[in-house]
Length: 94
Image (cartoon, rainbow, N blue to C red; front, side, top):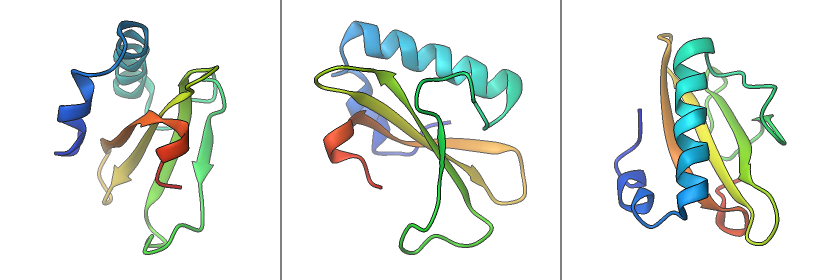
């Protein structure tokens, strides 16, 4: 469910953010990639090097300063979802 680089970040997350991420992962497993009930949920479009078939999304895990976000994508034609970024909003890859 996580891309390789995300694993290192998980241990350093504040407890509240880690708990929110756990909840997001459960929601992704239960109901798929479109999580419209999460704060600031949005499909990311027009990223460099993004294929037309790729579907990428993001939402906020914690508001305020710093704001934490999670970014995920649907991989291939399957229903496999990979979280490729968790961290501060300022460093998000979008």
